[in-house]
Image 1 (cartoon, rainbow, N blue to C red):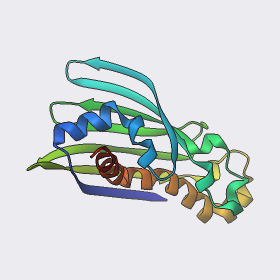
Image 2 (cartoon, one colour; image 1 turned 60 degrees about the vertical axis):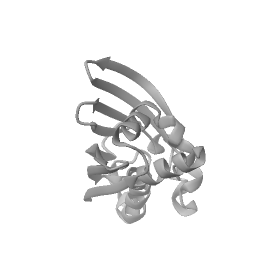
Image 3 (cartoon, rainbow, N blue to C red; image 1 turned 180 degrees about the vertical axis):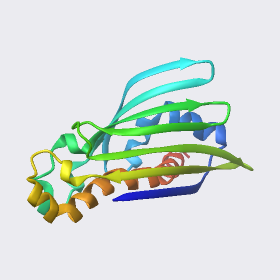
Image 4 (cartoon, one colour; image 1 turned 135 degrees about the horizontal axis):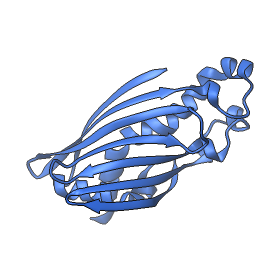
Length: 177
């Protein structure tokens, strides 16, 4: 199942403020993300206007539908986010990697913050491909039968968090006012 997701959302911050918030303080947005327990910075390196970041995301098991929860291990809801942030054009090029190993999903994209008067736009272009038959511990025959539910769970963990980043930033800003 391949998906192309495009997001263009207004943010109540300047492009610079939003860029540095999302790049440098993503863990502070966790309370405003619907189904993420925490985000940990694994590595960070800087070189002349470019920042390389690896963040580990931990999804919330309580948000998984009960009928398929027994097939879902913590590792399926945990992924690494590899991002290269460029300050000059306020852009991030990133890819997500499931922590369970294997090829449960492929997700990559770009995020860009564009000045728009006193606020900015968050524009994201995302490519997401899901492979539920690769979920460890799920027999292939059962994976085919449960494919729609497994795809939905993986998509519910990855796709909405990308879409809801703008909403989370808006909630974060409102909480600080």
